[in-house]
Amino acid sequence: MTGGDVQSNAQAGEPGTARVAVVTVAYRSNEVLPGFLASIAGASSELVHTVVVDNRPDADSRAEELAAEIGAAYVAQPNNPGYGGAINAGVATLPDEVHWVLVSNPDVVLHPGVIDALVAVGESDDRIGAIGPAVLNPDGTVYPSARRVPSLRTGVGHALFVNLWHDNPWTRRYRADDEAVAARDAGWLSGACLLVRRTAFDELGGFDEHYFMYFEDVDLGYRLGKAGYRNRFEPGAAVTHVGAHTTASDSSVMIRAHHDSARRFISRKYAGWHLWPVRAALGVGLSVRSAVLARGSR
Image (cartoon, rainbow, N blue to C red; front, side, top):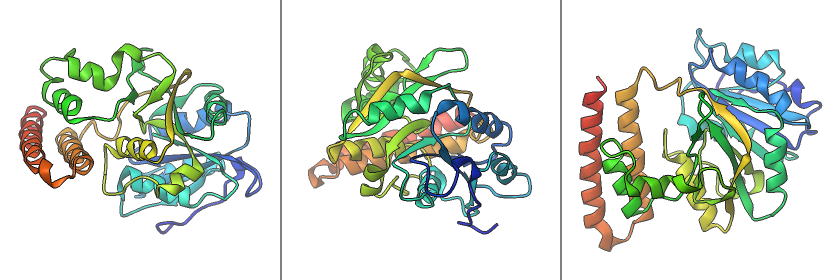
């Protein structure tokens, strides 16, 4: 199929009947995508419109086949616009009746009822723009998926010291470690799995596609907050993140991508002309750290 082509979605029932959608991005996801798709049915008591966006629709990809097996829509993106760009492409295909969109990695397993629980939280307040579940590691521990928006102090302190001093105060504050299992508002929610209000997402133009990978979720949470919406963390709903399957063999590339995105976000947040020395110093520091970590990953 050509980029942007969409197949029918029988799982959602007749077109236009679902008010909840799931959009996921496949990229070398043959091993994990079946488990994710199989978990959708038990996650919601409502009909769900599911879209699989394939950022690597080559002969080895089974994404189209797996989508067809559950009646999900399939969108091919052979030019690979990145994670945020792919999610935007999937959301653009949704019928107008969809009010809530679960954005998720394919290497996630949704727990029973999790979509229902997230929708209930979102519908409790019109100003809630995004809701995130507890993201569990395979061993059952909680990943810090609801964090503060990085500031110059916490963001830089975390970036510089986390690999040398894991429990440093900047990292603890940035990750909100002391509040890891408390329902609360957050600065941003992990894009590994979060429910977004369709109108809020559309109002902001979706994910900023300048972030090819990493920080697109930080940026979205920051912009939602600036627009007056709340990012709500609901640990009573949970998913399990089985692993970062697409990055395991490309660690040096991903390290550079992460630092490039971090530099872009901090530079945009602190864009005033009087802050250029800070941006310059930050850029140098992140570049050096990226080079050191990339060399160590070889």
